[in-house]
Image (cartoon, rainbow, N blue to C red; front, top):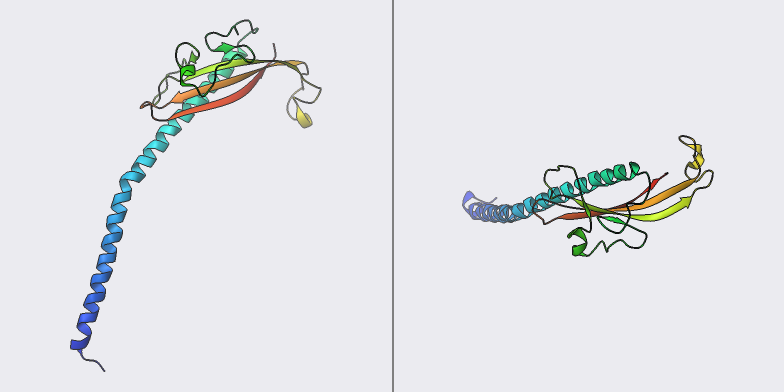
Length: 171
């Protein structure tokens, strides 16, 4: 058997190596914490922008539901005829009166902007709007379709969300 004198140095060396490894792990963890906090903050800002865009999309749908005809679609004030809507990805689209501003007061975001494009009137078949007879009477006839595009930006201006939806109205 070995004596106490021969084993003492080896245990000390192993303990120091384990301590160094744990120290490096701790230091590397501290270095990633600020990055994770920034990612979480960016996610929260993007979520605010998305929630605002979704809310304003519903506002635009309500606006369309309250219309009695399409005479307001004259390519100004965010209401466009078929094929006349501005490019969604051009920054100038969202400034200078090309869009409509939301009437809602939303926290954590700048005032969201949207525009609506008239796509045209389409005739529906007897079952196309009521597939498999779910819901109410199919109410066949003509449906006027619109494209709604909404852009919302967080309060700091670093994260924006653009969504597009299609909405049909019977006049």
